[in-house]
Length: 623
Image (cartoon, rainbow, N blue to C red):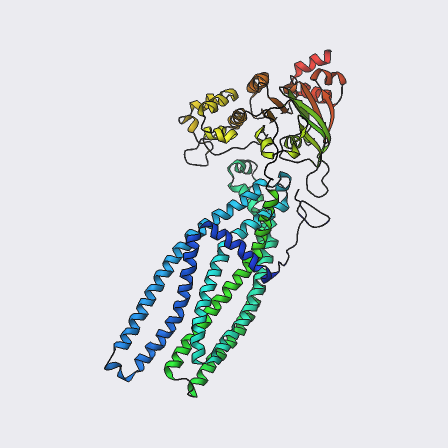
């Protein structure tokens, strides 16, 4: 099991940004980035790298042509024989045209490659997010790490592109350096030394950017959440009904003001560092041009050589500036990529070993023995304390209790979404912890109180209950008939091809009760031996609820059903009822037995009957 956080804490404990070894980690991080980009499209990546090298080499050739052009123009014989000048002009035109073509083609390839890399990176995030245990997935710390990883993944292509661009810059620098060395070696030394102040400043800026973005992750997530309250359709109605717009707007403005204030401090620091670096580089550049002037005046450089040297110094400054910029972005991206690498590094440990045993197709009994579970949040009390219970095949077992007693948590443990801290979940005596989790998930169907509403067609919404059979239209219709959804689906113009929800064009607005019937149809379509229904009728009207519970045994045949409900009248027909309180089972038995005991179940049932079922209450009082 994976826990996040430093020593002495776990779960939601905040972290602090760390230095990640700087350039010592660059080779490993480059390998991570390059392998992902290479796997996205090897052909395009190779083309991009080769074109970048050719583009860089062309800069050096361009300088030589510039020198030859100046020499040809100053040649006294040019008026007699202009062919050398024409030759150099043609070469310059061809070189410029070639560079333009390479640049346009390279941009096109990079855009396509970037899309492919982003898709592959997103799927890697999905691999981790879909396999991490739910108890960890739900912690703020994991959500922060996932957001940082998503942000870092957006920089993957930048790492590779900047590396390729850096190769091109180095090729250009090499060509210019050779030309400048041949013209005047001292100029080369001065120009290269001028890059040092900018380099130092850029590295400091990269570290500051990383620290700022790292520290802002929790606040940025909260700010995005507040914004979603205005834009999410299901929430917007309550925001307006309760006149919350002004309050939430002020909250968003306050969070944004805090971010802007921190951003201003961050940018002020960056500006100061950048200014000092630029000032140092400017002084060195002035020294290079001063030296060039000195060499020209003293006759150490002729006019053609001086012109070419001036162009070389300017080119060298630009190429070194580009190289320093690429190195800064690489260094900065490496700090972010460490977060992505650390996130993706969890994947091997999350992958299940091959060949895990699978349980039987059906079962006779499921048992929970002394199951305990605590959420991974600081100082969280145990959610389940020593739970022991059983569900036999063909039984309807009810779970009741007050809000917060642990009913839904127990359902998640039973369905394999949560692993217990201790204790066992046994299927016919076999601990499911030793079995293939996919086998368990395949044999459980769950309808949670906050069931998913997929903005897809009605057919897909039901068919997702068993995706390998999603094209079995007749089985989908049969499931809808059993849940009572078939009647209203057939009234829609597009029938089972109707897109549910008004989010997409042509989508149909669906009532919460209709959504719940579709969720029940999804459970029927799954045909799993264990069915867990968490408040399955909360959105149904009284008649529909009564019909469902009366037909529960018929609808689910020989399957085992765990029914979680706060309506005590609904669980009366259950074969066995467990009463949960503060994470513990405090009573169990049939309805009649629990009423005779006169304990918590009888108390809660009587209170509810008195409030909602006065006739039944009077009958109870009479007895």
